[in-house]
Length: 276
Image (cartoon, rainbow, N blue to C red; front, side, top):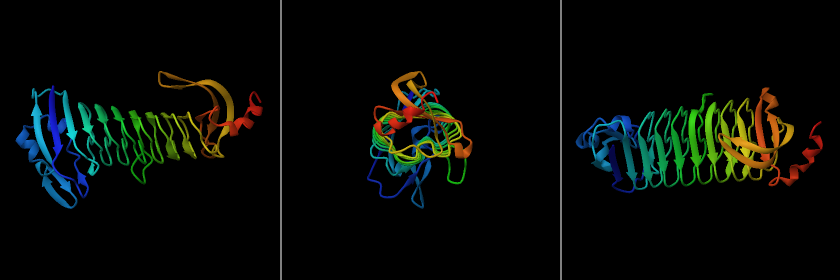
């Protein structure tokens, strides 16, 4: 296995676009070639070595390549763009578009991640030990194609529109989430273990959203179905009970929204419709 270490040299003041930082691209190059790869810092094209120190360990030219990024990469965008194998580990924060269109391999971040994490992701796995912001697993603005496979795991909190236009795959948020998780989704599963700010599953046509904490209200396009003892997230079984809704009927949707009954006593009035 080859490990390529990229250590950020200095505090970054403007965005750096570095879609070339993928195992597929770097595994075929020697250290000097990696240092000469062109990336963009703002509107200026620079050698990768102007931003990163580059080191290589245990080079064996195999396809099992790990890229380790050390330092605050919160200004660095598009790391792992279209990657299909290998692994990336970020020891710190990371910027926007992490894992964009990735189809395989794994990405692990010890800190926080920026917007559009896993955008149009097709496979592989992304794990964020800190928080993430808006549009996790979403698509480009103006498109209807979001995440279509793979898994995203956020240990902290998430922002708005998690899984926008999601078609397949899984997203797990251990903390809280903002507005509109699962908006426009047609497949896949989103699990929010804590609270959601609201409008979950708006305009969804399929898939499943599970909320283990509090949600202020259920979107008006959802119909109460039943009280379930548990909910399934892949192989994981979550103990309930859960209020289960289907919708969004405004879109003739057949998605499922499961909400913890214990954390949402204000929804107890739905129980009179159980078995109706």
